[in-house]
Image (cartoon, rainbow, N blue to C red; front, side, top):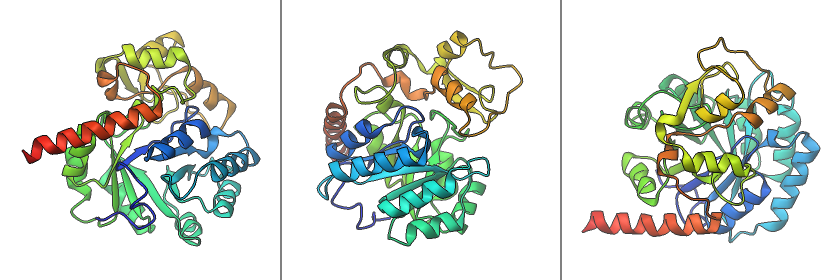
Length: 306
């Protein structure tokens, strides 16, 4: 579908720099938006709602209508006790796009719609997509097999075929997308936006440690382990970081509470990444990366047209 007016004209490329737990800060988001792609961060990357407000004020002060909009990721789950106060901060600052995870709640959608914001909800199955659509979201983020973090298990072609025929809203596709050609391929499949996470971890403005970035550069797709051993929900992690933390992927999962100190330590010391590591070989700035993506996109488009 055509992107809404709040996005058209403000995106250089149909790309979202995905919200990365403990990695996306205002530096990464601002750099992404200035480069022309939608930047996003999780609300829980700030330890308090007051801290969240500080980041929102910073971004509102740095970005203009000439830049791409930004997004905040809210965990919509009963264990997230900060949902309501964080939503109030989002509404106060009229955050352009809100990305919801682990639950689609009509009240949250209504809150964001009250000021004209957009809600995108991440899903891994058709059933979850239908529930989100029923809740009134504007778009779906299809998190396919190969994505980092809490990824799904369906091939991106299968997941797209399960959702696009009946869903007329915005669709963003996630799962091992790294290049401008990948972005074009996502568009050809029916997606409106490409959702890139791991690629933006390996940039100079991310809050990832040098060691984390280097593991991504050194890793192959086979070095990604999909396991529930870290937080009870299956997610993709770098095998080397699991080994360094003494975590056996075959062990019984130890459920953690969202936002707890234990959860922060787990994701701080055990590093998430997707199969896209296979195509990541450097750590550019965000501006350099987006410039490269744009050139690759145009080259791929010209090649297909030829």
